[in-house]
Amino acid sequence: MRAMQQADPSSPPSGSSPTARPTAERPGLSGLDRYFRITERGSTLAREVRGGLVTFVAMSYIVVLNPLIIGTVPDSTGHFLGGGTEPNLPAVAAGTALIAGLLSIFMGTWSKFPLALAAGLGLNAYLAYSVAPLPGMTWGGAMGLVLLEGVVILLLVLTGFRRAVFRAVPPFLKTAMAVGIGLFIAFLGLYNAKFVTTAAGTPVQLGNDGSLTGWPTLVFVTGLLLMIVLWVRKVPGAILIAIVVATGLAMLLERVLHLGAFTAPAGDDPGNPGGWAMNVPAVSGSVIQVPDFATLFTVDPVGGITAAGVIGASVIVFSLLLADFFDTMGTMVGVASEADLVDEDGDIPHSQRILVVDSVGAIAGGLGGVSSNTSFVESTTGVAEGARTGLAAVVVGLAFLASTFFSPLVAMVPYEAATPALVMVGFLMMSQINEIDFSDIEIALPAFLTIILMPFAYSITVGMGAGFIMYVLIRVVRGKAREVHWLMYLISALFIAYFLRGALESLLL
Image: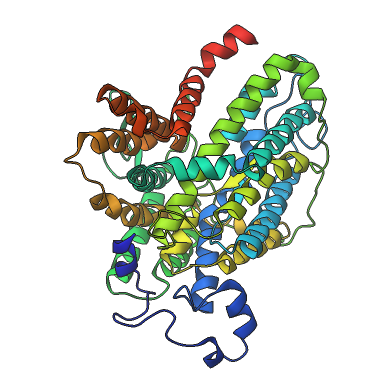
């Protein structure tokens, strides 16, 4: 976290105190400044707005991706989200943006923390491919289980259990979470831009067939190099500038070359391997659309329990809850570490409020019919641009609300232009690794597993679980069982159950 603060081109000059200039010297902003504590945290209005816009750009893919995951899979009755026997992707996109916008504004104004929320990846896929197709299950019933999970996790927060868990985690594991998340989002950026791809002989490879090809890859490389150059030169807004320039280049290439969307070869069909990974950087027709909120309030709180049974529904809710519970904790630590908002006791300001808002995200996602909403690790991109307060999250929320009307503009930014920010932030988060004492095996092994399994297993939760279990195991075999907080034993047992949930589901469902 210290390295990040020194490297941030938006940080105050060396030797100056972020609270040295009183709020009164900034006429017109005193009320806003006092509420969000902008000056106190060493930030400015411009940095907060810029950071919010960068976070939104880094997250905006969810407006396109969430509908493709949960909007294209029918439930057991043959119906899709939003009603009907055909996919209603515009409605799912509008609902996704609306819920993300409202929750991000809630997070910013109440917790005053630079963390934005949206439909969680992994959670939505679990609903689409494992829950909705269950015999007798409807999409309304599946969203009812999401709603139930949100209520349970909110109760855990209000009773103080979730915060107690956060306090029980050793500081070095919190740092390892931040480092692991950095590697995770860097890999996410490289993979989504097709800079690395899956391969026949190896798990991943450079580009296609071991080399970089295609104009979209050029856009990614150009954006990343420009971002690095601007960052090294300490240009304010380096990340946002690079994203805008890369998007402009992508639009130009698409207009001239008509690259289209990426499709993989299949049989005699050569596909379109040189196309854009997700969003095609072009606008066709009007850039303004009247949003369709057909997914809202289609939730069936009882239908999911009726379809899966009490035991089956409990397993589903537990699986959702455990992933949501610990993903958020890791993300909160990662964002706070990058923003240098972790105090000397390892605590985070307003952490209880942060956890409450995140818990409400699951409830809102169920009511909105768009899957559980959770804190997004892409919020670190805004922090890298200088965001330190909840105002940045409010900016993200307003941008999401606007995107319900301007979805064609959101869909214009391709992965290749946005994901260089994830790689850059991954580097910044990785720099915290020097705070971990790798000469101590009791620290080194749990931290190592936490860090490597997040990208290797493609899951923040898996990395955290492995680290927690290994920490407890090593302490026990070294005769230090009494030094381990009882909650760490409970958490480790829950993680073991989580890792074995496939076997448990096969026995109980």
